[in-house]
Image (tube, rainbow over all chains, first blue to last red; front, side, top):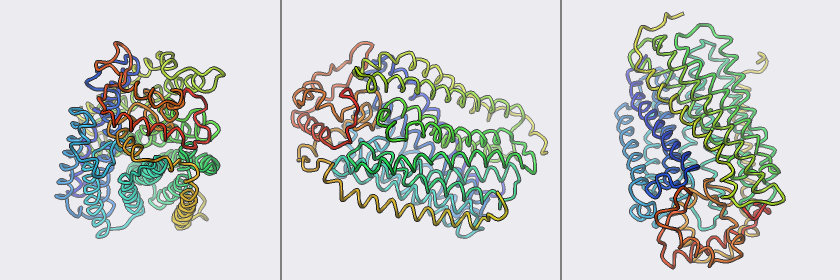
Length: 459
Length: 144
């Protein structure tokens, strides 16, 4: 570790992994509720398990992004963090706010939570992924502003690199677009229209800048390839991401009461959205092939390559599968969407956070560059278990989705929703088994950090 | 990449491309806003409908159901439930009010939300309003 203040990244990473495991557990509960309908009913109804599952995802990814920024910005800027104390304070505030919100979901009925937090004064709750009480949302804005201030001041006082610039742009966009979560008109169409400004412009917009910056940083460090080359790639990838992704928002505007021309704009631009992810895969493999040194942390290199491939498959290929409006007409809001959501989020955002944690954690734990060979073997096992089981989760949900689309919508004799769900049970059981394997992989990931031993030789 | 393609060219494509397409997006959004009154059924938004939307949100209905295809995939689509229930708000109200408190053994069941008569009425009116939004003929079948 080159700078003392990089150490504030560690609690962020630890919290991220802890919440990740909790997210998986709630995913398993929901998976079981898909086949054993009354599991934990009425104590934890599906909608409660689901908001815990998705909100934990958002929170741990945000912890990961913040930890990544606190780790890499001092190193890139070649100076200490502007205020490590502020970073630590914000960590505890964010963790407490997150924990209280999740406990609120679990301990009181959602309607009581809404009343308790005064939702009727400024109603923002009860929309997918934005279930947090308004007061929590305000807390998120405060934490995000303090974080941006801290990172921004550090970037300003130190060396400016393309990586810090792109990261800062992405993080600023993240904060700005979150503000649309406070806009909730009575008009359902407008509500949905601007809801996507948070959700789509995050994950298919500014988050890709953060993803690109983190990946570029890890690749510079582990391959030793010239910074100029990597920065050029980074610009091309994020240019393609925004050029296709901004108008690509249109693929959410097909069936929600918006004008029909969005079917053209959305289909054409979102059909090109796989391009930046494909470029990212080519980029990652090229850089590793042109490496000037063999970094001792081979697990981190594996994660970096895996991120690029799985982001391309999950976001690119599985996104394209149902993005054209004539296809989406039949698949919209089915298990196909769930399949895409799982692999895209894992491949792009979960994996990039696991990549930077894998890279940075040995140094945060006082090592020179890497964990022992034995530890890395365990970590690579966790990589393959999680990644392969996520591929299977996606395939099973895709199978369920194809069948659902056919039976409920495509055939001449469409069946009611619940009848169709009954016919999909086999797929849901297989998904649940794959989910258990995924949990084993996540546990191994944690165990790998506690396997001791000497560092491998610096090659 | 070839040496003729420099980093500053890549940077210019990023800034130029992003700004251009964001402005184009804003132009489309502006046009959409002016076209929405024809498709979003805003004339039907009464106080009851607005209250119904709040009831919908404060019970996290979207945590199980989809509405116009968005939400969770655990329970039926409700954007067209008014039509599926034979154009009847009474049928919707009766269904919500009759959910068993302890669920149905072995099966998925909607929780009993204990809604007041006003809230029950409001959420049914909200779903009626939603079913009359012009969704380009989505969903493809009445089953949602």
